Image 1 (cartoon, helix red, strand yellow):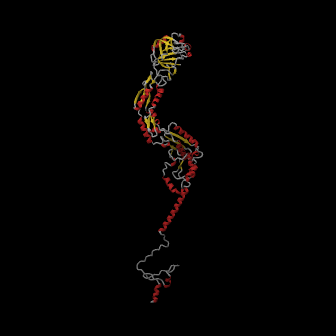
Image 2 (tube, helix red, strand yellow; image 1 turned 90 degrees about the vertical axis):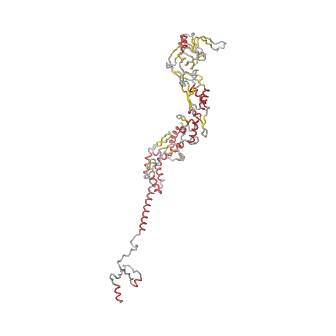
Image 3 (cartoon, one colour; image 1 turned 90 degrees about the horizontal axis):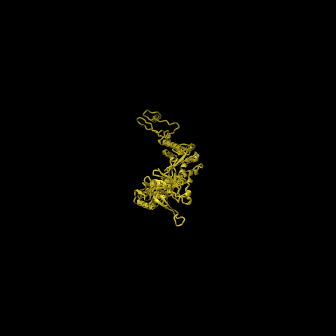
Length: 556
């Protein structure tokens, strides 16, 4: 039994018997006990045999280790990309970056400098708005920008450590309106002071400010810069309007000069003037407050009367004139003062109504131009009565026509300085000749004459007079200049036509020789006491033509 048992243990068995696996070369037994006590019996299984599952310790990789490697690789790539971006954007411009109108997107420092210089070569600045316009043109790029400094300053603010954020922001920004292309505005109260605005040393700041300042001064010279009724009245609408009031504002010179220099420093093409580019009115009152004040002022006016004389409109009293008499107090309350009406009427009479004694110029039908002043003929208003009429008109807001009350009237109204007579007798002292014209300028009569002797102090007075009367067979009585108690002369005449009171006039003078009437120098030795001597037959003819009230003009 024992021998048989040993034989079966060392030899292979049949399929149903146990098989002992040889020990691998260089391997070891399952344990020390196996070497001493013999091989450990293996279990015998019926049925098909299955391979034992791999333990995974030799040759196989787990999913967890693969992910770790991928993460490590990705981190290395991101680090490299970030580092590359930091390096790149410490030397180049972000996209959508512009300086002096030049697109510097993705350009390195040297390329950006060259492009800025090219763009600034034709730089011009326009300052405009509300009727004001001024233009500055640079002679060359170096005058307005240090291209290298501008680009270096730009790149210095790139914040390369934040390039992903800055790049995303630049890519998302609208390329249509970059910051340096928008127009500068003279309204900001945050504008730097003039000496704080950096510009190249080659920029002639003094010449720039002198040119801009002169243009602003010229513009402001036509504007009052104050809020008052006269400046707020619009003749086209016949009322006080806000737009008219605002048109008197002056430009804020300091703010505009600062805005213009800021524009040059950034090479912005325009400075657009806005409402805040002007100095405020009425201590900074709002437009709503100004409008309320103007509405109240409009309630006080309404008078619109035409002053007529001789069928013609001489002057008009309306809102434009009343506006001169309107005032606003500190609270913007309006007041209409009618006291100036008195002075207005006096000025009107002197310049537009009263022609008596004023200088007038006319051309005689024979072509001689004549200027004469003095005399008693013409228009003369009743100023006191007119003042009262106008004060009543203002109080009642009257609309319509007012006939000017007169103390004297003339044949026609043609305006100050022009003829206002109809038929007239022209006495030319230089020619010693008299002529009578009808209202149409037709010559009806003429004659030689002898006027007052200037050498004895009896020159005939010059001026525009009116014929006071016509008298036949009158006796002319002189003054008692020699103080003998008797008139210096008593001379009977057949035709007496006085024009200076009843003392000086035209009359027949049969004591003068016919030769004297044809000698233009005769009056210097045989002249009258001031009257105009005529040949008897010519005096008779004139007496039949001339009428009381006709104009008599005596001139040199």
